[in-house]
Image (tube, rainbow, N blue to C red; front, side, top):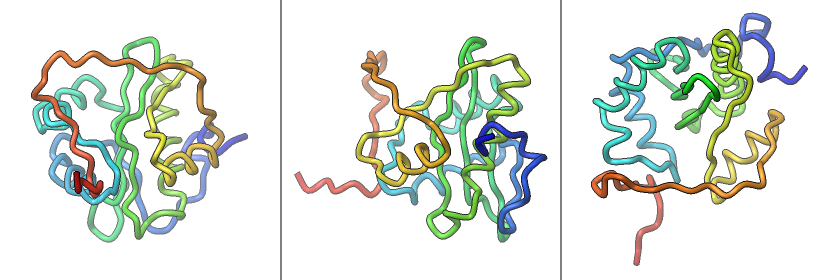
Length: 168
């Protein structure tokens, strides 16, 4: 069975990272981690403390952090609308990658969603995110042939790409 489908309790621990539910008070450390991830898209409003706390309160058991060496080294915002699960901002600090931490965090989220009766999970990975796309393929996810549309309801919710070359 693929790693991401197994319950995290069935897996051997990787490195020294602990996989834990994300708490509201983790926001500052998680945001600091996001700001180190090259190519990450951070939205002005959706990724604010207020909106992330609201997301965690709505999905109190599904989002996750990985802790190692006394700090947060990975995170996933994970939630459900009751029909489908979604993963957002999946990341592992560069120096902790390739240790199974991302796979274990995904397994944690998938197990929580399965407990809620969710049968399908979606995520968005930017086409230019080579590291992320390689990770998803490696753990068995398949890209879908769909068009993704969005309609911006609040123009203040701009996306900042971390570490992107903005030499225009």
